[in-house]
Image 1 (cartoon, one colour):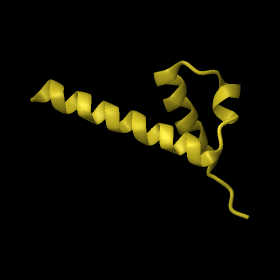
Image 2: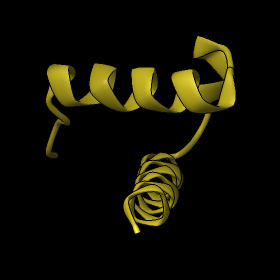
Image 3: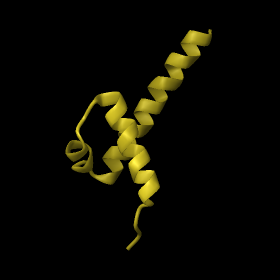
Image 4: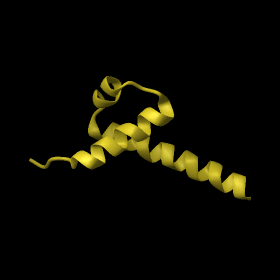
Length: 55
């Protein structure tokens, strides 16, 4: 069994909580893959917005 790095977990939780204003319990209830997908989608949105602001 592989464990997920605690620092990485806190980083993901903070990132999702900051952008979606979800509670800790709501975020921890997500399966790892689903939480990672939200992180990836938020990052993608942020990149697009940044690119639009620069362009």
